[in-house]
Image 1 (cartoon, rainbow over the protein chains, first blue to last red):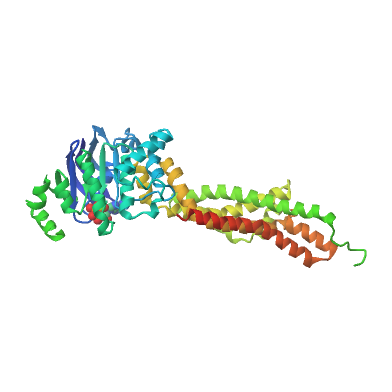
Image 2: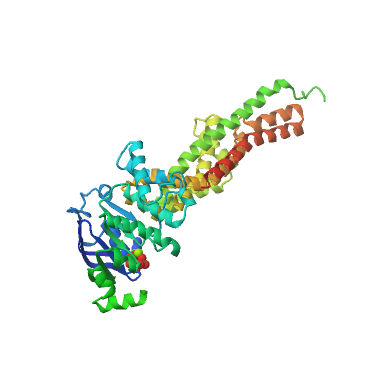
Length: 240
Length: 217
Ligand SMILES: Nc1ncnc2c1ncn2[C@@H]1O[C@H](COP(=O)(O)OP(=O)(O)OP(=O)(O)O)[C@@H](O)[C@H]1O
Ligand SMILES: [Mg+2]
């Protein structure tokens, strides 16, 4: 379980998270929606200990993420993360991209790492691209590679930050399909997204972020189709 | 020709080969040492804050902007005056290596800086440590990006090594000067020397273009 408890986070004088609390249970899919600059990405970065927090607490399986004694590199192995920019490693083939972290972080043998990488690449539909260099692939394929690369570490949670926002419209579908598949398989996910249809259909709950706080959170279909908070109503009427 | 001068003959080839060899050896030393130091300094510069960088930068600026020939003469005069003169090869290697380092550090700095922070964050998010990220991601991507510049600096070091002749190192140019004063055949000898520099440099730049093409993935 991921438990975010009254988290405050500032960049200099700018307070970006102003007391965010959110529990995500095993197997749950939570979508995070909200306007630009409301702190959605920052929340994911704090969960993954990429950014420190100023106040509050984040627990991942009861481990305090930001405690001094926590091994953050080790913790991140549990938390797969995919970004808006796919950041494929351009000097490696698709297979090497996916096998790198299992090999050097988990210290697997080369054969083991490659086997896992192949499996996850097939999982996301890149079974025919092992020896291709990622820069030769479309954005959608590279984003699926980024997902497979994260999955190859066998994470317990996936944090997804607007993974379709940088894609050409015709490539969005293939990536969303991959995420849908993961959700069906029971992966626990927090998805920051602008895809309201995806949030409604795939996630269990939706959280609406407004200026650093969760202004509304509830069952996915209810929040998207029948929001209670006027701020959520205003936001949703604009993005539709 | 009168008896004072003896024309070029096959017996001079040993001298010429010594010159060629010495040019190669001092170039290799300067390129290897300059590359290693340049990597370290370039990395530190990419990582450091402004204050450290200004300090580093001004030292490097001096090395880059004072003509090599002056650095060579100043350095060897200075160590000579200190009481233990260095062999021309040693003094030349030190100066040429530092001079190379000054250029290489800028090359590598821009390489390291070309790897976006988000690429590094992506690597860290997979559980890689800081050093694993540097070694497996930042270094290889950065080095590929600057390979053409690295090659350019290396080629100019080979040519610049001719200047080490001013402190008495018997590299290709100095051996040829000796031959010229003995034989009075400057044209033949200088053309020959030019060809040698070409023979040393051309395969490198050719190989460089090949590597560049291969890496353009
Ligand atoms: N590293 C940083 N340094 C300083 N300010 C930052 C940094 N990262 C984010 N911010 C600021 O924090 C605020 C929230 O950023 P964040 O990226 O979390 O928003 P977001 O909800 O993800 O927005 P978007 O939908 O545009 O991605 C913004 O005002 C942003 O400028
Ligand atoms: Mg964002």
